[in-house]
Image (cartoon, rainbow, N blue to C red; front, side, top):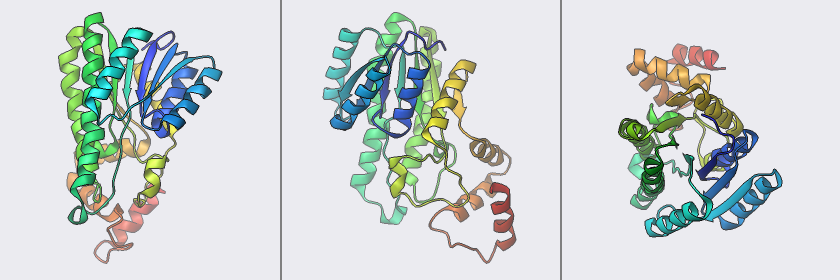
Length: 275
């Protein structure tokens, strides 16, 4: 995909992966960035930083769980700043809790932002892209959209849903010359994961690595972009031996004891391989 001279809208742009993607788009010659996030003050700071780099930045402080507010703001942005060529759906939240201790308000919040918010923005932009017969949509899922993780049941469910949603849209919107891509990073060093207990043996990546992988994948025309060797290894192993990956995930999760009496040799070997 040619990024130079284009206009992009990035949700979750105030921090983490969304911010890294926005800055990487600046490096790639993007012409205009519409930045969406809830934190108005932080969003204004990011927009000012991007403006100093010579790219027009329009901050849109929005709560994606409020469809009417989002509808009005996106319609006005399209009218005032012209067509959007690239949509990056990056906004998301995560609550880590054992399922038996989970609470409905947290579940509803994850579904509201990760799925309903993404749906709302995508529907608004995709309809307009279909009229102009071009565009690219990137939905940020996760490795947990391929391998569900204990203590992250609802988050994993939303990320699985994003993969399916993306695949369905890819088939539907192809006739309108709209490309739909999924981005699946593994554990990434962001503010969101600071309150999440670590999974054993997982080596975190940086938001900048994720952003660069996205650009590489777009340039290659990939429709599904896995980020990092650990993600490729995990998905490959899950295809060959899903029962083995379930054991690995169970042992890696914070719920598991540091050392299982049943699998001491297995754990030692796995830790050596992933070191």
